Amino acid sequence: MSTVSQLIRQLKDDRIRIMLTLFGIVWGTVSITVLSSLGESVHRALLRGEKGLGDGLVRVTGGVTSRDYGGFPKGRWILFAPLEGRLIRNKIPDAEKVCIEFGTPIKEITWGKHTINVHVVGVEPVFRDLRSCFPQKGGRFINDIDMGECRRVVFLGNILKERLFGRTSAVGKTVRIMNKPFTVIGVMRPKTQNSSYFIHLPKMIPRGN
Image (cartoon, rainbow, N blue to C red; front, side):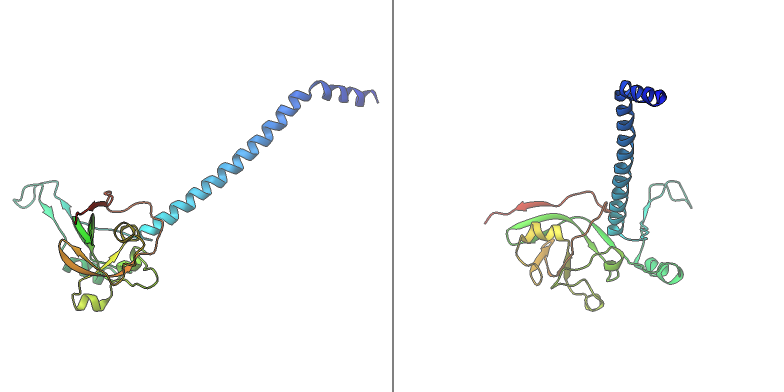
């Protein structure tokens, strides 16, 4: 009995130390759980963002030579031609889908009284699946008929559409890209994306009457 009484007195004397120890154990456990959950959430968000850019995507571009070769000096631009893109498509069986893409410097796109400076990109229909550019209801992406008939059609990103048209429906409207008319055939469904090829943000330039 004396041993039990002594233990009880010892616990009373050390209650502050015991409470601090228990608090430390609980706090450490909660912190680890919260950090693990936060890390998993961030990881999932990054994966969603990467898939927004393109799942399993490899982008090949031209560049500038870094050394002399065959009598030519370094610093020459080497660009890909459409034929080379088709060769990749035909000669590499592991490449499930291949899209030839034509990027441009910043161009003006105009509707009504507003003009926005954006990057305009020429692509093929398969680009939709490669880059997860799915249309909102009521619109569509570029198709093979557009390509075959060389139609002047344009598919807008959802942010660009909001900046240019606001709440007005864009499908069927005619915009001007570098003062040439293009028909809007679709608007992209909003998606999560961590990065893009370009870092410039669209800028709106209001025009006077």
